[in-house]
Structure formats: C-alpha cells, structure tokens
Length: 163
Length: 265
Image (cartoon, rainbow over all chains, first blue to last red; front, side, top):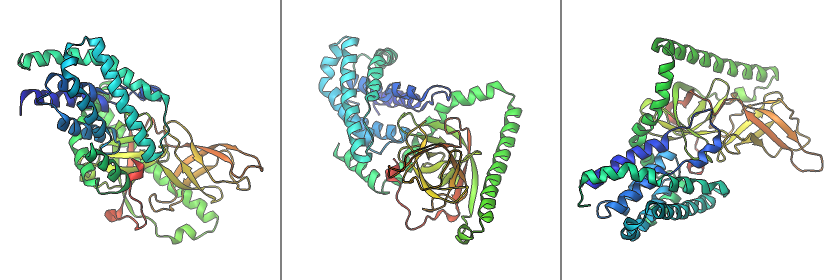
C-alpha cells in the first residue's frame, strides 16, 4: 500500500474517533449542529496532496465507514464523499496554489453542496424537515480547515517531497 | 455514485444490507470504544476502582429490581381491572442483558445510542432496551461487539402504549431529541389526563407489554377539534443513560408481521 494511502486511512481513523466522540451530557443538544465534518477535511487534504493515491474509491469506502459511525442510511455519506472527492480531484492543482483562506472557501462550498444534497435525499426518503441549522456544519468544517491542514502538512512533508 | 444511491434505497426499503451493516459496525466499533475512552477515564479517575465496580454492580441490581417492580405494578393494574385480555396473550419470555452506553449519534436530528453489547453476546435486531425508569428504545443495528439503539423520542420511532389507569390504547410518537412524545389520534371524548402513565401495550409484538414509557404532561384541545394535542415526557432519562438492559426475545424470532427496520434509519 502506498504511503499516502496509509497516511489517509490513519488520519481518517482519528477523524472517525472525533466524529464518534460524544458531547458531554450536560451540554445543550443544539451543540450537535456545530460539529465539523472531520472526515471530509481529511479526505480533501489527501485528495489534494496525493490525488494519484487517494481517489473516489477511497472516498466511497470512507463514506461508508462514516455512515456506520453516524448510523445514517448506508451510502448516504458514501455518495456525498464521492462528490467531494470528485470536486477535489478536478480542482487539486488550483487548490494547491490557493491560500488557506481560499481553500477554506472551497471547502465551505463543496461541503455545503454535499450537505444540501444529503438533506434533500433524507427529505425524500424519510420526510425529514429541512432546517436552516444545517448551514452551521459546513461553516464549522471550513473554519477547521486550517487546523486540519496544520496537523496533516508535517505528516505529508515527512512522507517526502515527491508528493 | 450510482452504487451509493442504490445502497441508500436498498437500506431504506429492505433488510438486504443488514449483514453489511453488521460488518461495518464491527469494523468501526474499536473507534467508538476509543471515542468513549475519555469518558471512561473520567469516570475511573473520580473514584476508587473497587468502589466503581461495587457501585455499578449494586446499581445494576437496583435497576433489575426496579424493572421487576415496574412489571409487577402493571400486572396489578391489569388484575384489578379483572381483565384476562393481556394475560391470555402469551407473555414474552426473554433474556435480560446489561449493557453500558458507549456512544451517542453525532447527528443532532437523530436520537440513537451505542451500547457495548452486540450479536456476539446474543443481542438481535429489534430487541427492546429498558432503563430503570422506563422504556428506552429498540436495537436497530448490531455489530459483533456493539449495537445501535433507536430511542423512543426519535422521529422515526412510535411506541404502542396503553394508559395504565384505564387501558386506553394509544401511540407515543417520537418528535426528535429533547422534544416530548406526541400522542396522536385521541379525541376529546377519550379519557386521558395530566399525569397519566403510559405503558407498553405489547401490540405490534416488538415490546413486551407492561413497561412504563412516558407520563402525560399536556392535554390540549376543544370539542370542536377532531383530535386533542396530547404530549408525554419519556420516563427514562434518555440524555443521561449510562446502563441499560437489553431484553432479547427467546430464540431471536420475530413475529411474521414484523416490519424491516429500514424506515428507522
């Protein structure tokens, strides 16, 4: 298995633990709306840095694992992650040139699109009402992009400059 | 993408993907246990180990007693009304297993828990989950080491209940996390009052009859309206659960009319 792929699955494991981490019982339930999508950030980082190793296949499998962790319909996250990976793959050369702020903006837009698609799907499947609170998660995810970038960039440098 | 869409539809409509769910749940359960570590550590740090163990053993014993007691009070109410109706239906013989809550769903729209017992310990899909105070929910996904529980206040959950005081049949529908249950389709002629306790009716075959579910906290409506607006608060502290009891039906067989669980996901 190539090193970037290993690094992707390793960091995805950490992201999944962060996703599964329960909020303290005392905290208000509304806090749940503000949880960033760590797995998306990890996915986008590695798609951007190692597009030849981490692609739509990995994204699909990662989405399936997220489905299992969050208990959503199987395939729901897999679908949106494939879309996000596709966006990352088609933009990675430009993304690498962008500043952190511009990258975060792209993260915001892709996650927003993915989230809306998922919400629409759930509305069709389950009649679940759409809520404006839905917009918080993409925003938080974008805000956390510099954090994830800062954490994963040293790992990527350590893997080698060839990437 | 097409494959994902097909999976979403298949998972929603059928039980075909249940083995895949089980495999995935087993694969990610180490991560879920890891995510629970900080809480487990906090708990351990606060007390002496032995005290924690003794405390847990005793509180489990206590909830076992409390559950036995709940059942007794329901039986008494039945007998007092001299009705052999429920008694004539065969009582569900089940096995009780204790499980600790190790996770909650990160989705604020859903009301789900993850417990540290799975099909390796004999837990099956559709098993009833009880707390010391009342009904908690049902198992909707099992892994080898953990299972996922749908709580009674989830939007996708409805519980067939009866009013303990007079045997009036009703439904207790989940309205989302933290929102009281709704009791629909009751007209102003129906005898339901503030403070009434709703217990499981056993209709539908999913839950054994006689376990407390919720207490009525609001009854609104006038004679001009077809139905009253009745709300009930779950008796179990759904946000603060630490230990639960999973009641497995003997042999794991479900009634033939039992629905697949796809709608619950």
